Image (cartoon, rainbow, N blue to C red; front, side):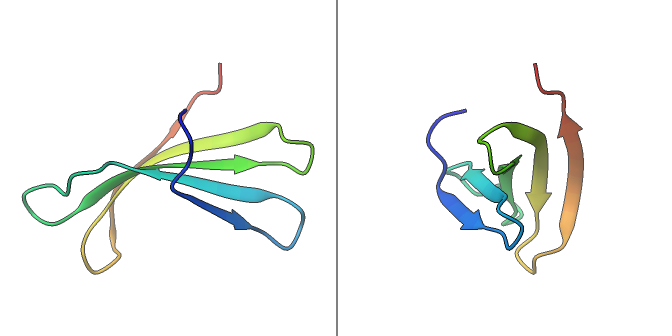
Length: 66
């Protein structure tokens, strides 16, 4: 994954990295890839999500870590 658009440090030492698609869909929703990284820098989960303008998750699935 390329450089994230947003990095949030979580209280347990983990971090959440989010990469947004640059274009909104016709209905105003946005696609993003969310990655959870442990304190040692190891990626533990990757999720693809599509979120509506109001913040509702329209689509979500976990992506396997290879």
